[in-house]
Length: 262
Image 1 (tube, helix red, strand yellow):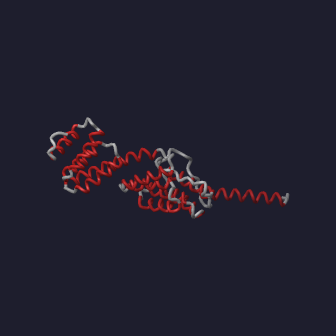
Image 2 (cartoon, rainbow, N blue to C red):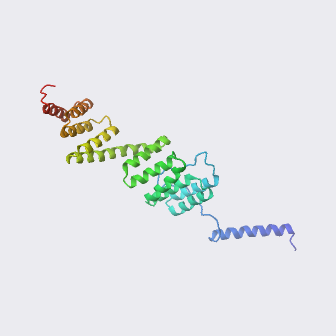
Image 3 (cartoon, one colour):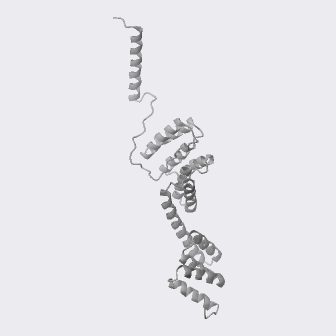
């Protein structure tokens, strides 16, 4: 029985579809590898580089989301392939550039990560995901001050990034500790101007810290500046009246000026 032309055409289409499916199944076709289903993210601290409403690139957004799924599943190679594809499709799509920065962070390549984040920020200087990622990269290089500034800028750009607040507080504490250790070392070595500057920076970050004022007063006393020493010691005493060491220091300063009665 001869087939009608319409039936023959339908069979050819069906055969073609089966062939395409078979080629895809055995890896011979051009089909993309599907991203993994969402699981517990491997890098929960990474801030997803969402596309602002003004960045209209639907295809690039899809590729970037697929890449992010790969990244959070631990497959950085597949993730970078998707992010680069998004950039090729839409060269001005800076969220994918930021995503490449996070992929570099996952590979522990902080320098490359900073390069990608800077490229994203060159197009949008207030892009919070890139600022947060830059902070992560700088932190991995132990640049505490610069990392803190990047995190604070990210929070300023997007106050909803609540998880960054705790990191900012921790960094402020670590930075203060580092400054205090450097200030004490400078004072011990007789570099009083340097020590005074470091204490003043620490006080600017923690203006209600009585012991910082007390230590600054001690530096002033050693350098021979009794007037500043007394002012700073009394400020420490006001902030913490129960601190016996501050009261002793105040007494010593008065004694050095031969003022026997306050």
